Amino acid sequence: MSTNPAVPGATLAASGKSVARESVDTALIQQLDSAHYLHPFTDHNALKAKGARVMVRGEGIYLWDSEGNKILDGMSGLWCVNVGYGRASMAEAAYRQMQTLPFYNSFFNTTNVPATQLAALLVEISPPQFNHVFYTGSGSEANDTNVRMVRRYWDLLGYRERHTIISRVNAYHGSTVAGAALGGMAGMHEQGGMIPGIVHIGQPSYAQAGQGMSENAFGLVAAGWLEEKILAIGPEKVAAFIGEPIQGAGGVIIPPATYWPEIQRICDKYGVLLIADEVICGFGRLGTWFGSELMGIKPDLITFAKGVTSGYVPLGGVLVGDRVAHVLIEKGGDFNHGFTYSGHPVACAVALENIRIMREEHLVEQVAITTGPYLKAKFGALAAHPLVGYADSCGFVAGLNLVRRTGATVHECEHFDPAQGVGMICRGHMFDNGMIMRAVGDRMIIAPPLVMTPAQIDEMVALIGYCLDATLADLRRRGWT
Ligand code: PXG
Image 1 (spheres, rainbow, N blue to C red):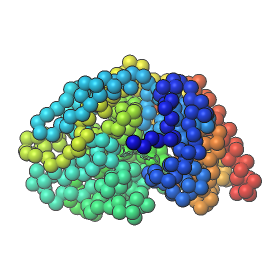
Image 2: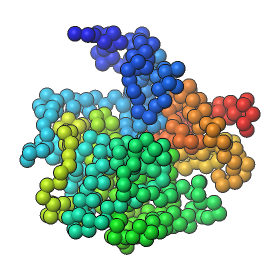
Image 3: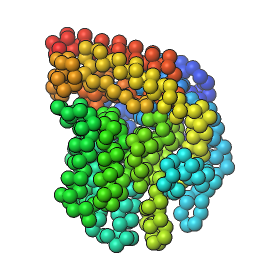
Image 4: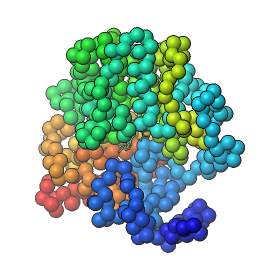
């Protein structure tokens, strides 16, 4: 038997709360990491040169790395740790379920208790048109499920031509082949991530494309691109439109208020199914259980993952609205689709506990009524910083654009040359100062844990301001501004 030298007998879990610097051999972990671990979306040569940062512990909104540095996690892990780190009751829920029934599948006419209870609970907290759930292991698998499910739906109704799905440029819908194809990231399409029957329209980014228009006028223009595309393809060939209520990985693109109601009107007009990808926007992120509620739309399918378990264990799925569920169930016969881990009992038990916590602590209401508006006021004030051209937020997602301040509005400011990588420089200053904030081009984004308090919002915004100052000083030294 080989032992792993990087994980000594005294484990982190056994050592309790504080992780001493010496309890993890950073250099050894980095060496093993660089020798054997291929990371997602990573340039490994570049990573090899500097070594990965080793995260070892989390508590509330904070993380600690193996060097003992405390870091404020402005990204909830990866848009998912909604209830914050270090929840013992989540671990206990997993432990109890593992002792009782760690696994059984949901194929062959069998089910399990947590999967069934969670399905009923998801129906309870989701909009009224949802009465069924299909489980997957991730958001990507859930979007693969959507592709197959909407095509199956139209096949069963006898419209076998109706297979095209319309999505948006810069959308993120996952990294399986279908997920990448649905997404609007050219870099993913180029690397084997495209399948036939998926097309894209522009994203509703006011900062990028709304010059000379009010936000609301632009919202209608951007939604109109969907109608143009449906007519260009022929409505009889269009199966569905998919969109994130707010685009997350694409840079927290918050659409104007007019956008989604107009999208709904267009989908209704042509009978096109509406898929809301709520992998980020679901489970309280926008101050509602699902972002669709805030946007005033009535989707036929909702993709979920991430926040359903606060990322403690992997789980995803599709909420299937009555329109689709009825056809699948009444006319369908077998739907030849599913995964080993569909309805995994441990993941579902953790999700049940996660939702229990969210309800008990009123986290969704807290984001809607107190902390979301507080974040809006505090984060919005960063727009006054000389490096910022635009700052907006919705619930617990927020973003700001780094620009050369040559005018009062974002459209009058000058953008940096993308090759200068100003966003990444800023991200580096954040990282070095104990703040996790993501860069998407020159847009800096956050999605904090929903448990963040007003005092912690103050702390975070002050830290961001400090790092913006450091970035500005750095850019001045380089003569870039
Ligand atoms: N849909 C949306 C809207 C997502 O944000 C997925 C689907 C795919 O989920 P899985 O569980 O398969 O990863 C996501 C995932 C980033 C980043 O850089 C965002 C995601 C994943 C990885 C990186 O912001 N979102």
